[in-house]
Image 1 (cartoon, rainbow, N blue to C red):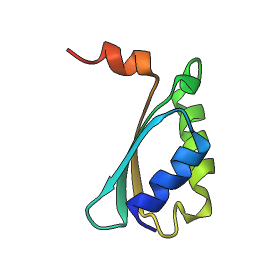
Image 2: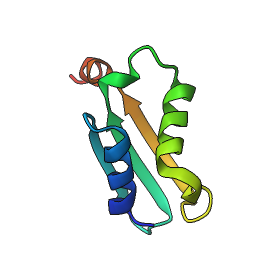
Image 3: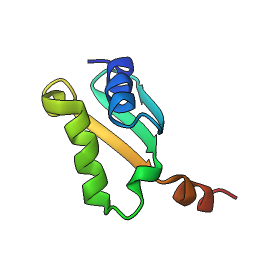
Image 4: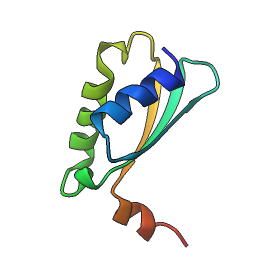
Length: 80
């Protein structure tokens, strides 16, 4: 699996979100999903939604996945 495929899966699951995925080796990935639908959800709930979107490849083809999961408001509050 590559960054583009993961990004496609996330865009399908979060159609209104800002999504970006990167990897230097196609084994260790970083993903950023900014979605208003995360409002009111715990960190664990957000991670579960992303894991469900990616499916069983997580843990097989994907060795590590670093996630930044925010609402637009949370992301905006962190900018200076």
